[in-house]
Image (tube, rainbow, N blue to C red; front, side):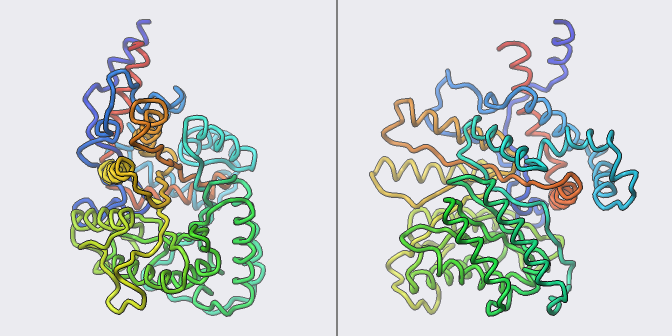
Length: 467
């Protein structure tokens, strides 16, 4: 008991006022620009309506080992003295070709049980399925599953011509995505990461290999009840990817439901106009636009002039786009396309994945949904997403809100939020490369992880003291 008391005294007790910022996108813009999930002033669990005194804290949903691991990793990442050397070490391990580092069983076990277990879903199908089952047991609707294999183009990188091994690359990519879809399970999402063959040929929809592979993926996803998120990429290829995404949305987003979703980055000045144009195209061609809304991910590799000048402008763009889609009304952020070919007074059909770690954005979306429920209005199909291992108070807060709506007096006027975790799977080394990229994108956010550490420490102390 003395040891428990000493540990509990070491855990901070300050009240929680925020949540770690992290990537769906790009939180290193706190001072200069935009972020996916910058630390706000209020946590979701504090602001969700009708919270009762008897309602347990949101983080009470986490198993004790996960809570303790999250606290220790967040405590390390919130230290400016620890984060820089840790990132250098992770980068060294991720990109090393040394057999000693790659096949060291002690190092492998250490990484697998710490960073990998915190942020990644597994190396094998059985491990991924176990992770998914664990998240569903907590209360998440399911997962947004993605392979850790990805590429990053440096600034100014050109798109090269067709490679001699392109056919083999595409076949390998297809198998990887099909396996990801299989592992997701019904009513989940699979994220398509654009590897070299995809990026290099995304402008050529008439190419015979890649469209066929993507069509096979879409058909299989449709048969499995899995939705596909076509991820955003760097600016040098994004226009081509947008056209590619619209091509498959036009084919598969029929009957009022979206199977294929495109990704829109709110930190780009052009995003509201781009989305308005795509909504107009979808309405004209008679399909539902699938929208995954993020703040942004490529500050380190895209030209700075493409982004909003301040974080506040990015927040306004993100929340304004979300509100417009949810209310099915144009507003000052999301306006009808300048040369709309459809009827601007009729808002186009859209499904939305709100990818955010920001409690303020999540709370605003939930408030709109509750308002619509009270008024008896039908809302768009909406899902919330956060990265695995991050922003757990936001995700768990959504689950708690859903439980209150299902069992409490709020049942008639609220709905159960559909909360998902974005989970990456692959080998330890593949996932290390993914984690290094995420950490580099979120260097400033990790340095500001103090507030999440406080929230985790508060829940850890509550359990140790039996409060």
